[in-house]
Length: 314
Image: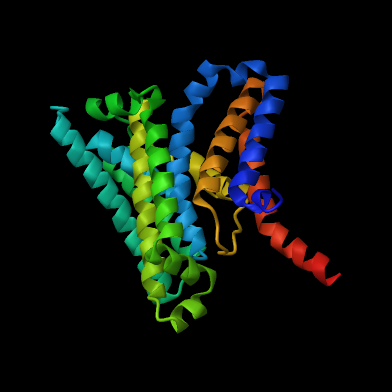
């Protein structure tokens, strides 16, 4: 049992259960079935984006361009409609959005690996470039998403909202690949210790670039789901996910230093943050409090390794 609770996913789940219990005491309405059902789509969207961030952090990076890619994907599925609104057109728009995310990820990955520019610098700059594209392509105006995308995002399968179902599938798939396949184990080793990866003959640079490409696709997928759910997404909708994706990773008990982490724990962290946001609002606090909490979580995640090392050497 002791070893069980050393695993990130079980600690994250315990934290989530504790939060739900506290929420049930101080704001009972937040744990009603209707309330939980209402937050599931948003938890799913955050989880999808957070998996992308997870991949990059596992390769000792961090992708701030999540905000821009998320918003750009939402613009692609809203501003590029011909007016017909058919299913084939919607599928094409979704494909274009995902391809755009992959392109941004490729640019990030190559700049980091080939030019040796720090990931934060690269992705902050890329985020600004992508938001420039958002404004240029949208003309500064929010548009309505294609109807088939809106219908899909709002639909349910056996009572489960599609965005949450997509998140469940992706969490399971990515976790399975990373933990159960040779490719996934090489990915983990390359992130944990690039020098060891190189010594073993792994293509470490390829894994790093692949992480950014995968992240770009997942950020774009989250943006598409959000656009469908909100129907008329704001041009800067992705800003809410820039810090939240990192916070979800940290809440999952994962280290920001590239150590092996749990994708499932990151997904649980996304649900934790989504419910926490609902709880904060239900208690009458401003949404700014959510950002303060997220910032505190990230700061704690960055500081803990240093604090632990100092305690060991004290």
